Length: 288
Picture 1 (cartoon, helix red, strand yellow):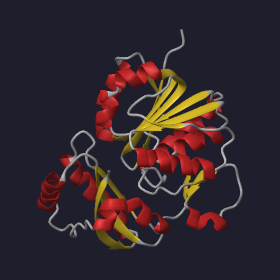
Picture 2 (cartoon, rainbow, N blue to C red):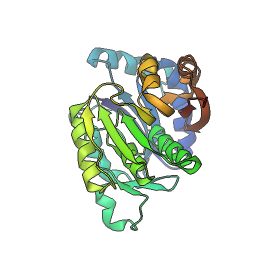
Picture 3 (tube, rainbow, N blue to C red):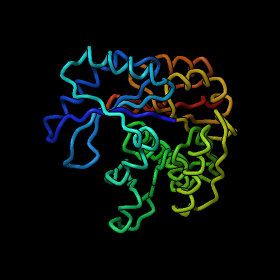
């Protein structure tokens, strides 16, 4: 499971640029996309946070990383790692999250359900312990990339690799995909995705499987993971892609090696979206 550490900066728009500068400084400590760094405020007028999500590091490695961060930024407030946040941080914090707009989509939690105007572009997501509320730039980038793709041509079959909450699979269904399937290595995320799919009453059933990496061949494949696994799975993801591959979860510093890995498998970059130093790539298989 993801482990979270966060530092609270303060309230006010002036902290946005401070937070961005701190993230840029801490980025030198990121190794192949680990940990994931972000700066945001959960409420529109709330406190700005520096958020650090560890995926693979154990307690000792996390402590060393946070100590190095302190050496780089002595002015950084103390990081907090409380047991509830480490065990189930998204579930505990999601009630404070406001609706997020990405293209035509608006993603919101069940606590905001009664405030939302009925529209096909609304997606209700309760994350539990899964990743993908659209507050992270990589998820927003994927939503925008999918919408742009659907405007160019109809979506046919779509596979969402590392689905997390299922938000991208639901979005593909909303955009008219003929068939959508999703998978995740984490059984908890799979259960969360299944609940979200049911709540959102998708046009067609969306099967969700417990599976690491690509689980089906599809015309369009989505993988919002991290740079290191995206490079490691380049061959499998390329083989699973019939025509279009949408990749995200990578910082701009990692775009070049990711592009190279997929260019070597015959895919070319058709579009690139940058949000808050996070990149979303749309790659196409050239038509013959």
